[in-house]
Image 1: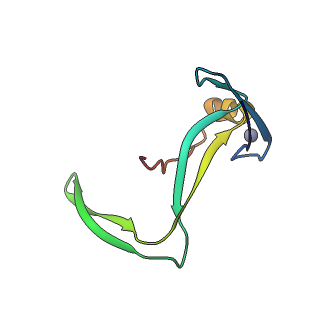
Image 2: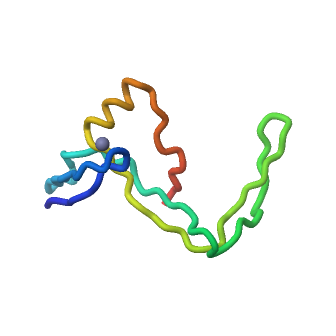
Length: 94
Ligand SMILES: [Zn+2]
């Protein structure tokens, strides 16, 4: 099975080959990222958490969320590993 995806950093077209065991080659997969679509909802407070002496609000987005798969090509992945560039931090649990 072959998938076509784009590198999320440089836009290179990736050809991902997945074998019967589920292993893949051709790119690096980091999971799905979701983010709120503007003007479709609002942030509502659903709880609080404490970190040290401060209390922070936990919020949820009431509107539409868009989801996409985050892929990187091997070149960007290796550059990130060696240059310590910050990658995606918003990995929502599914
Ligand atoms: Zn790339």
